[in-house]
Image (cartoon, rainbow, N blue to C red):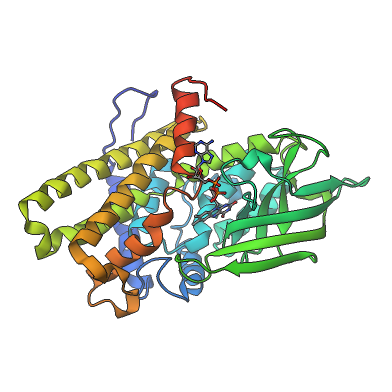
Length: 393
Ligand SMILES: Cc1cc2nc3c(=O)[nH]c(=O)nc-3n(C[C@H](O)[C@H](O)[C@H](O)COP(=O)(O)OP(=O)(O)OC[C@H]3O[C@@H](n4cnc5c(N)ncnc54)[C@H](O)[C@@H]3O)c2cc1C
């Protein structure tokens, strides 16, 4: 695709190569995903399925296209990756937690890591064989992430001793590696004095517990750190400059998933139900299709920013807002059409359509405006960075 600066019309027509790539991924998923797969939210063995399919995606060369070949990528266009993201999300994100690796952990390591860190951490991500956890949120630091208190005391040899607690971590109890944001300068305040450490989640002193939520099993966890010894080479980026690392990573994360693709697929199921034929519902359906296109374009804008070598900031927040609101409106529409059926579990749903609508409505959509920073926080970022407004404190 051809792209230019923000606020200029862009041509988002996919090239023949990109169209062919989409067809190839679709064919791959048709062959490799179990027939009963609905989404990463809808089955207890979702993590096992994801691990298997992600490895197969990597072996077939579909997991990561656009990374540099020196790290195992194919120097491919970022649009090829965008195509893959769309197809994977539309099919219920079979990469499970590993989508984070591709979307933002790998890019953050490429951006801030030493050569040694890149050579160590990127190849296993490329091969689709490692689960990471993002250890940012704490019991008293969610939206106000800068108030976090987990500490990493720097030792004379440069290593760290970590103490504190993290919560709401996706796959935190299963992950092998953690991307930890913590306070390395004693007495520092807010975003100053923080650092990012890459930690082995099996290090002695880390206790992990699953938190049961409506998102399904094996999704969310909390972790407690007691005198956890972390080696000096775990530091990603500069000491006490971790806020910059975390914010760059969050910019990649917020726009990394093509959530609209899933909502649009579910909308397709709803459109085919006879119940959607009522004239007032047809109007709503048309509005939703337009919202879906807006969400898609907001994501394409972020891809363009990345293609130009810039780091997305407010553009990611904008994409996130369009995507999460669209997802929730599609979920509401599903509930209008299906009523109590949206509460059924995927394996007891009377049809594929019901299973997919139910999974979106009850599991995925409800948290869309919370995860990766709440809706209100995204609005604040746009107000400050896009519109130049000052926020009241
Ligand atoms: C499914 C899911 C997966 C998650 N995965 C991870 C993960 O892997 N790693 C991780 O670190 N965290 C994760 N989180 C945590 C997530 O980032 C936090 O839940 C989120 O940042 C909000 O923090 P909080 O829950 O403490 O809510 P709070 O910060 O307490 O917010 C409560 C309400 O107040 C509003 N609010 C707060 N501050 C402001 C403000 N300044 N202006 C306007 N409104 C405000 C919020 O928008 C929200 O509506 C996950 C959360 C979910 C739901």
